Image 1 (cartoon, rainbow, N blue to C red):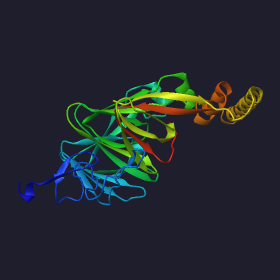
Image 2: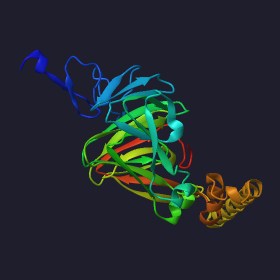
Image 3: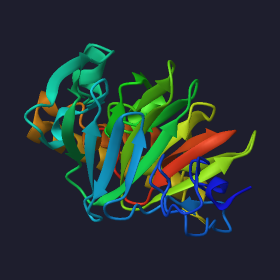
Image 4: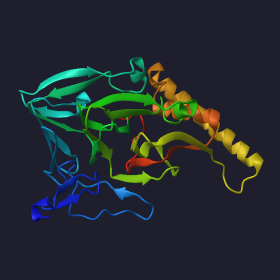
Length: 315
């Protein structure tokens, strides 16, 4: 094998790059660093260097900035991407724009999701960013693969991916996180695609073995492979060392306070505020008492979390 034939595998997406490359041409991850995994099994998502470039077909993407990163996209003549309309920062005059209908109808309104998504078509350039500090995570999606993402985490996706969404079923899920937990699903059917996510704070990734389960705070959830199943676990919390009567009294007091807060919020916000996360969280405590709701994820597959909690329904 000659030197020019030598390849190096990306530790993030497993794509093969020339041994002389410093970053992966498929996802932009640095190739000259170690894949550091914590004792708990989590690894940090690769920190994309400023001006890192990667590509898919005729589309090239360059990352600008680090605190509030920007994705500059150069679209080929037959290429397009889609994104939420407020994620666009700028575009070339020649880049054509259109919209695609998002599935779900009125259910999307309840989940604070857009009815339509913006589409940019090449040739031309378009730039996207989120109005918040964090990290960009690049997830190449191979043919037949599906990825589930928290709502509003998508920065952009290539149009080779199909888009759908689902609500996490159950009354407990509705009470735990406002109007409910919505997962956006991206699937590569006709060919591979690229999905760029914005994670608040830092992003960590972990691969779960078959049957392995972890529980995470719902606000920290970022993404998972579709092979990872999910459920919501609710734990009743009681003070340690208290008698049954004392626990009951404290639970009653907490429900009364929650009810008072919910009533005040409803009076202040009116009917328009009935579906707000705060009101639903407070109202739920009337029925459940003090408790803790966690998202249970069971492998096999990859999951990603963000260190800065953003609860479902927050853009």
